[in-house]
Structures are given as structure tokens and as C-alpha cells.
Figure 1: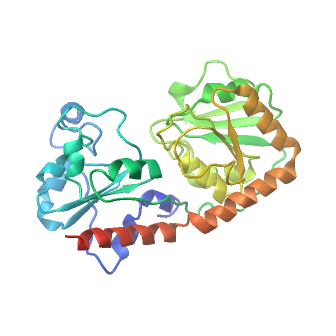
Figure 2 (figure 1 turned 90 degrees about the horizontal axis):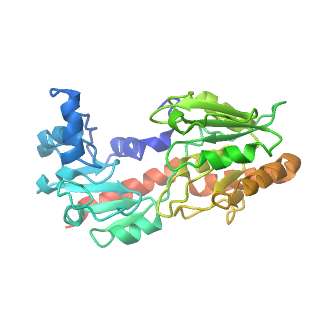
Figure 3 (figure 1 turned 60 degrees about the horizontal axis):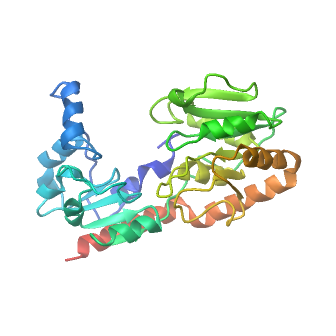
Length: 332
């Protein structure tokens, strides 16, 4: 993977390297229809799925597979996969029960899946009514995010990410914090007037890798005081999971809004602190406390790295995936 984190392969490399399978990666169909029509097709016929270009290519190659492993969620085309098993990753229950028959999250379509891999226990509880489901905790690439910290003469906090973020609250807190706050965020979430100690880096569709490269991001993790993850408070979402695991691997305390449905949080794991939603004062207090209490910041960071090394390794995650796929293939 080079400088791209191994956790984002979602076990596909391990499946490809396993002696138990002959596997191949399904690439999207090359456009033979104008993009504006593809966008309309995806909107009405493939909502919330991998999209027409992937699913059409899948159906063309269908006879080559005993099992399809979808890392991008349930597939709309599952209804056509009569003799092929489908295992999909799911992160959360549907926000509402879909009525569009082409939506992959309709209950009838979910029942056609062979199994589900679930990023949270809450997702496992919901999807187990449709097919065998298993909660498998995620992982973090600890070779890339190697835990090597360094000091800087200009202390700063780091925040990055796009989905479900509450940057306005963090920015309100910034005026009461005696350190720089670096935010890697989408331009449509950037306020017009930023405090002087907020450094905003624009990104677009997939932060942070379209804003800065991963070696720079690792360098910023290494030098920051702590990682801030301000969230909007969605009780069913996994927002912030990536940042949290990367911060833990880099021995940095995690300050995170109290929300979401992850099975681990910085306060109970003693690698950071949970912040009350929409509370700038709580953010400012937590950040200023870490500025003056360097020993506490070091201890929290060490605890996070220890947990990452124990429970969130890529090897453990890959073994869990391979084992589950084997079980699904062998199931009648």
C-alpha cells in the first residue's frame, strides 16, 4: 500500500494473499454512458450502493465468483445473484426504512445477503435479523502511524475529517485556547471569520488524503498536543473512528465529542476525554488542561498506543475477516 494506510484495504489484501481463496478485485465498468446519465441512474436505481459502474461490471463477471465481498455496503444487485453468496460491510442501521425498491437497504434486499460484517455491536444487533452477522472491531496501520512523537516550539492541536463534524463549536472554543488549532476540513464547513490561532487546510471529497499526504499527516500527529474530534452527535454513526485509532497509534490523547456508537471511547479507555456536545467551554477547558499538564498528556497517549497494539492491529483484523469468509463459504 506504500503511504496509504493498510486499514483502508478492509482485509482485501489478506483475502487475495490467502491460500484458501482464488480472489480478484472488481474494477468499475469504464464509462460508455455520459456521466450526467450515470449520475441520474445512480440517484434513482442505485441509491446508497456502490453505483451503476461497479454493479454492472459485477453482473457481467458474475459467473466467476462463489462469493462477493463488498466493503462499500449492501449491493442493489443482490437480487440477481442467485447462486453467489454476498458478504457486505455495514456501519449503522438505515436512517429510515427505505421504500425505493432499488435501495440496497430495503429489508427484502438485506435478506438476500449471505452475511454481514459489522463495525459496531449496534449494527450487528440490527443486521442479524436478516443474515448471520458479526461485529469485528476495525484496525489501524501501526507501521505507517508508528507512534514516534516529536516536539515543536509552536504547540498545536489537530482536527481532521469531514463526515458529521462540528467544527463551529471547536472554533468557538479556540479563542479561549493558548495554542494553535489545525483543522483539515472541507471548504463548505469553513467559517468566514477564523480566530487567529486557527489554521484551516481545505480539502474536498476524501479528507485528509486530498489535502495533505500521509507522511505530512503523520508528522502533524507526531507533533500535536492532542487530536480533537468534534462531532455533530449522531448516536448511530461511526464518525471519528479513523481519527481516533490513528491518534491512539501515534500516542496522542483524544478529545472527542460524546456521541456515536463505537464500542470504545477515550474516557473509559483512559486515553483521552469525552466532550459534551455543543459545548465550547468544555473543549477549551480540556485543551488548556493538556497544555499545562504535559505528564497527563503523555500518559493518555501511552495508554492509547498500548490499546492499539493489543486490540487494533491489521493482522488481527485480517485474520478475523479471512476466518469469517471461510465460515460463510462453508455454510450451507
